[in-house]
Length: 421
Image (tube, rainbow, N blue to C red; front, top):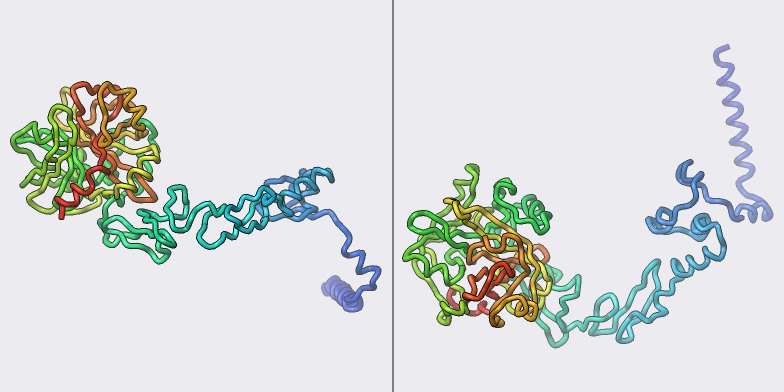
């Protein structure tokens, strides 16, 4: 008795299989019926019940005409959409320059560029450097006879694609090793952030240096260029007869062991530094021993002149970091500020003195006046940080409430490199 139901099911399945084997091939009339237009089955029951969704049907994945028809539920509207979506009319405007061949694709187009041109619309000559290129050189670009050539900052090598730059060593200039900390302060906007708020993650500013006098009091900031040289404002060397340089400094006990103190063996003051006008307010400090690099003490990258002036500064945004002393503070505290670069004309309009092409300025920030001289201005480009300026005290007419004033590093690259040879 127990086997009765199973026997009935087995007989039913066998009959179904036999019937299926007899109807593998259909008549011509029945076969044609199979190709009739049927409403598409939705992926889920709720998708079938609701009206079609254009984003889901045709943008998240490639759709067919019937799926688009379900969305619009109107033949003419569907045809208008379909002509631009699949048949494509983007090429009708001739977007490909220099006789490039245009091919319509779904929601876009493709240009096959003639020899000597590249880019989405063939707008770039292959032998020229173009800052707007999203897939161009990661660091430096040099125009050539037939093609432009890419190169990298010191400490990096060119990749197989001849565009990307990869660090040669673990401790390379401008390459932060504390990415979590970087994300933290990069998202703080215009706010000035103290070390306490940064939870002492000093890996944000490993190139930052502090100048201290014989009483161990900080008075200026600086920036690490390599193991033996720190750059700062020339005015800083005029304040005390002797001083030392501190790198890897923190305000937390957890990182106190990272602090390094170095004596200065020689100051390379710019020969044309003017005490009155503060022109050429720049000096290189040569240390008595090499800095031990770590994620808390690393050099910043020096950019090539053209790269700095045509790529970095036009990006409009930079970041200032430096040590500051309040009126009653005995220990310096760390400040950062994201600033916007200003052109020469806006600079001259807000400052009541003559600016030279060796100066650079940025917009006002509530704590502009608290940054010490020598504080570095840096700009990030495709994962690498480059030095673009250091804070200058300016002339007697300069008022810090009008905004930042910097010594423009791109004008001193050759001078710096010659000293550090």
